[in-house]
Image (cartoon, rainbow, N blue to C red):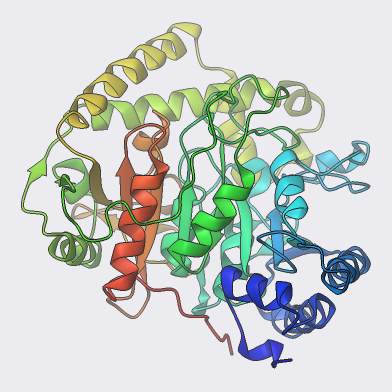
Length: 465
């Protein structure tokens, strides 16, 4: 047996459990103790499922003892964003309004899939109310603090999930991304995150934000771990009409590992102008490592970002219309006013936004005729201070909360698969987006792995103090 506190990583831990070198129970006990010690400093979790986790760990150990394979994620602790259903628990989605809902009957589909692969759920994780935000400063459940600097934001809306991975409380977490809610926390917390193609992973058993923009995906501390978790989640599900019935495609990195034949370009204009010096430098480091010498512009990006705002606000306002009418005082004020504005948008604005969406998608898909991946910064800056009202973008002081997603929002609007890789080139890390054509998560993951192997991207565990 080996010391569980010295071993980290999805693949490493799962292999150790499967070979009997670590017991799943001792692993879960160690991580629960780490949660008890560090979560009061960070506020990543909204609930700890200790009894459930220890019971599941005992089942994994029993399978190993009986000579049976518990699965590729054997014994690995994970968490889920608080908008994922967990059996016998009310799905609050970061709100107090949802407390009146009945408890979930089953886990969300992709959470159940990773559990069947041997992973062990240890808790639910903090988020912006109803996923409408980029900072995880929740008026009901408090702010999640960045484990690399507790005075700074962990990002949002999946901030609790990202911070837990960065701090080593879980080996991976499951989040959601509508306008950047996986990529922004990955950037701020210095970890890897995957937003798959829209429709790749089923959303069954999660509380929605925007039905035709919501994506689900994982956080991890390496590209290999990200790919391993992603593989366990794939597959058609009849409960989500947007989930495409496509064959499962293994995503283990390798196809572009030596760089031969990789066609890549930097995104310029909007994606360069809206990033600060650190973000541009991080992107340049990635470009140098990949041998990229070409830049391309996507002229429709500014319009696409505006259109994404319209669709987001209108859909969110529609979803919560009745609660806005009868329980307005129970919303987080930062969420309520934007939902109210969305509920009042005229239909012609929404229709026009959907037209812009189609035009922008066609523009970007044209770029993939000549390129396998596109590269862009993930956030306009590294993590701002908690409570910071403004950030500097392109020489102007702008409101922080709505503008942190400037570089992520246009791309999720058209559903592209994107891996965010962490670059530690300043006092705080910043992320770079590896953007692939629809359904080519394997390419983005392979590039992320290559950057990790080259020492450009990394996600060391943060030790908050």
